[in-house]
Length: 524
Image (cartoon, rainbow, N blue to C red):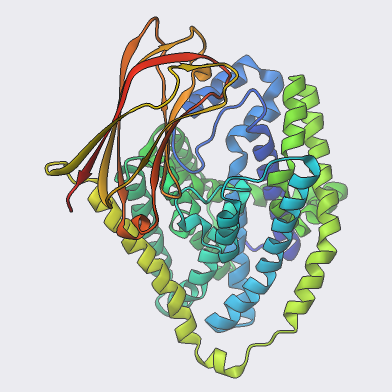
């Protein structure tokens, strides 16, 4: 039986390992040879691509491993957050309002500094700001971006974690209080409900993870968080080595079968806890390694906030050279650059933090603790009900088409190699409710790799985004695409347009003819 108590240095080392894995993943996932990853959704081909790339490019071992597995560093952060928050709350109990106030006072300055650094970086390096950046910035500042369809990964992809961690903060005091009162069965029930939520989102939501990603919100990662709480409550016990077998089994199955995919994140957490207890003595005996990891762990929140938008120049350099040694060297320079910038912004963060520390909660606010606790819970419940209604309506049969509209593509019939985006249709929605979009056309693509064929993209601003992969053709061939979406009354209150366009990712060419779009509106 291994002890699972983590000292302060252990926590920093774990954070250091986690952020290095995340940074290298977010760098190498864009540098060839790439594999994809099962982070926010599942795709069976990624594990096969992982093994194929390892066999074909053994010299790219570091690139391929971090590209496929590095995102699991997030689970280490979630695990150690649940553990550390529990230890802190047990040592110094706080009411919900005081707890959330203290958490937000530490988190919000980091977000403000990160957003300022993001726009400064884009200006200095000449990168365009993303579309709808005013709206997306507002979502980030309100910490609701993961609750908005297609907004979780905008501006800076890794910032989705801000939304997740705030949701976990909201739930933590309640979870811990119930667990202390009723035992660890509360944690077990929470984990069970979370997995039900994830599986429903995967299989009942028609695999459209992008519209409201299950794995970007608290239910998607509560199992690892509860595991951290459990470890902290069971101070003098550990994990028997027999835990390793089911954890490895769940992890392996989760890479091949979607039904097991949600369990990979908890499995990795269990594997890490058992493994870390075996390697921490090795780390302790190598003082340089230990101090380096503690240093990185101490500034991990700054590295996390900055690395996402700082990676692009380094990715461009590595891609332009296409060499394993240069890619690895570029990755190390990238890590060093983010560390240097983190040390520069750290004093700015600390200055804002000192200003916020002067703010004290009036007694009347602490007395209204239950009100402040209930408010965000009710908001989260309202969001859940809203999206639950969307799920039900999306799966209704189309049996009463009250309105059918048909359009033709309004653009030239040829997509040239030098065209990146080619708008072909904008349609204003006339009703809310369940909508079926049908696209028919005849296409003729160049004889090229499938990855080079332009994608037909359908988009509804702040509601829906998807792409249709064109088939390889010899001469004109008929294609047919269908998509069901749900536009609620609240979404429809602002004018919504369906946008269809070709996204010419690899600078190819294509012709189309007899292209039509049909929209069916379903009565509720």
